[in-house]
Amino acid sequence: MKKKVVALMMSLVMGMSMLAACGEGGGAAGGDTFKIGGIGPTTGPAAIYGSDVRDAISIAVDEINAAGGINGHQIEYKFEDDEHNAEKSVNAYNSLKDWGMQMLIGTVTSGPCIAVSEKTREDNMFMLTPSGTAVQCVQYDNAFRVCFSDPNQGAASAQYIADSSLKDSAIGIIYDSSIEYSTGIHDSFVAKAGELGLNIVADTSFTGDSNTDFTAQLATLADNGANLVFLPIYYTEASLILQQEKTIGFDPVFFGCDGMDGILEVENFDKSLAEGLMLLTPFSATATDDLTVNFVNKFREKTGHVPNQFGADAYDAVYTIKKVAEEQGITPDMSISDICDKMKTGMTTVTMDNVLTSPTTITWTAAGEPNKDPRAVVIQNGEYVLAE
Image 1 (cartoon, one colour):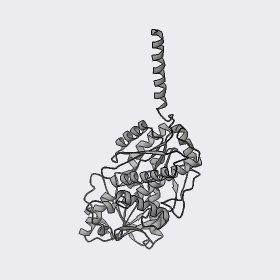
Image 2 (spheres, rainbow, N blue to C red):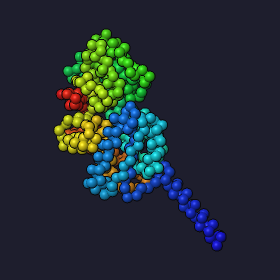
Image 3 (cartoon, rainbow, N blue to C red):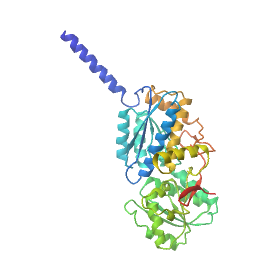
Image 4 (cartoon, rainbow, N blue to C red):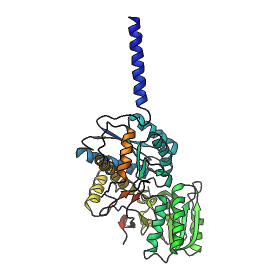
């Protein structure tokens, strides 16, 4: 009898060990539902980005589930706050893995995204970042992005200026030399501007330790005759710049990139200060196509405010995963690694017509980069509208 009990206990231990082993890395198989995780800042200085991503994913998941799911399977969705912190983002990733995540939409900001990409590579887990713009965010073949990369944003901004009525402007720059996002856009903008013959009259910077007083930078730009200021920075610092430029009587055109999106939601910010501000983005909440109108209306109903580009990126990311998974015949009982391999193949062949690109389309390269048309919007009467 004692031998039978020992044998039974050894069998149970071996079984538990095998189950634990299956839960490690990319080998675990799912059940009847797809488990999709999201990571981004919903608290802290970049909370506007992560909160919109979280809510937009939720809207898309609800729509897809109501329409029958992916290949007949429902989606379970869980989002973790990383506070725009790389270490916390990795912790969030590990928590989502314990939950059973099979694919990741994230992370939202570049530094955390780079850190998490190392983990998804180890696990061969499919990763689609809606808004991680640094080049390194998609350096591995399991990672793709919906947004433009930093170099693409910088070069596209310079090209837009060169092709518009702004081409003869005297350009000043203020950028954050302490973060990848800002330096990446800055460097590619300067390089492309040189190729196109644009006139940069002053190039100034700040760091994360000196990001509240910009009067010296603004004075330098004004003294050099800048009448267009390129701001490849986040909305928090940009809102301060727009307040401080009025105090010195400086009134140029301001031009930013996707990090500027969200400035109208800054607490206690006078929206009239942003009148005429331009930014390069593929999304306009005032567009009249059916896809955009449906998304904006549902988002406003859910949150009480208009979505930013980051939310649109995330909404499109969910529908991209759905289409690729259906075209590749992916089911949730497949291993994480097998799902990833099929998603990698499918991303290079799928064509999407979605909120960010309608009425045009978006495709992806094997390097994880999107092919889509950039557009510029301008703030008029407290709203983002497509620039002419």
